[in-house]
Amino acid sequence: MSATGYDHPFIKTLLMFIRAHDSSGAWETMPDEAIMAPFIMTKAQRREIPLFGDPDPDILWRLDQYFNAIAMAVENRSGVAVAPIMKIHHEGWGRMLLTAGKLVAVNNYVRELHRWSFDSVEDMITKAEKIIEEGVATIAKFPEVAAA
Amino acid sequence: MSATGYDHPFIKTLLMFIRAHDSSGAWETMPDEAIMAPFIMTKAQRREIPLFGDPDPDILWRLDQYFNAIAMAVENRSGVAVAPIMKIHHEGWGRMLLTAGKLVAVNNYVRELHRWSFDSVEDMITKAEKIIEEGVATIAKFPEVAAA
Image 1 (tube, rainbow over the protein chains, first blue to last red):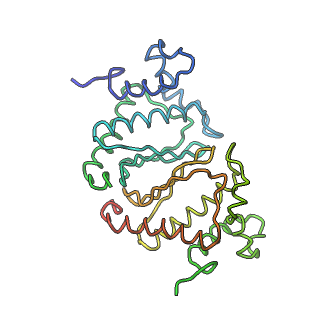
Image 2: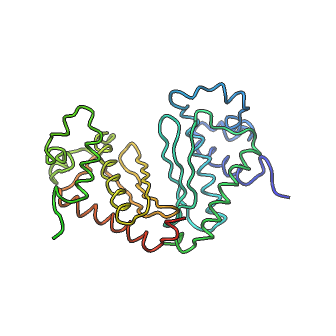
Image 3: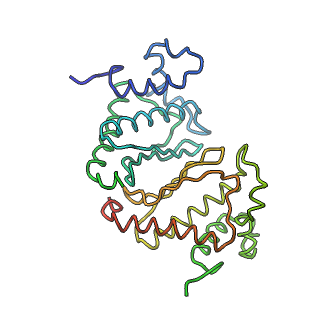
């Protein structure tokens, strides 16, 4: 019964964040599928991207939007204010944290960001949900730290 | 009875971190005072630095060393492994966190980094000690989160 694909609340939030950066007005009428297309790659497409040099800055920008959407989902479900902090080395690896009060709700390491993408929208939802659930569960486990 | 100035353990750690980046061998024999000099400014010197544009990258590098020395002090005194994460906007403001397990031991905001400096070595020690003590106290308050 849960929403899937472009109707899923996570994807809706992500689309909202992306469209909030629209400076030309073009993204407003662009279909969701077209906005999401750069996030989706086949395994073969991914392998074609070399891992040397710096990742495409657009990838890092998309990662930012993705992580902001995760932060908002954790905030909505836990009812606790959450702050994202990302530190990405220019060569394409780094650390992403979600903090709530004095709690680290999510602590994720990323690497090979040159190829950062998902097999499908459903694949993205599955992976994002895993992080969101981890964050919500950590806040539920240490509520007094999240409120500190 | 506590150590002051260049004999203070915090300053010794900071000097160690800085000298670890020595690529020419020149810093090894350079007096501590000369190594520390760029960290120290008078109020008048500070005011002369404009707040527009990006801060001098050397300042951000020094901030990194300072924060690493704080992380090491918190780790030594608490006995808990600590990880620093800093996210600095290129215009000279940002956030510095020390995490221990799932705990945010230190959460500091910095701004106007163009002028980041201290009145004296003693001033630096006082300010660093305040952050270190806050971190150690937070870990002591939530030991099970720091170990999570």
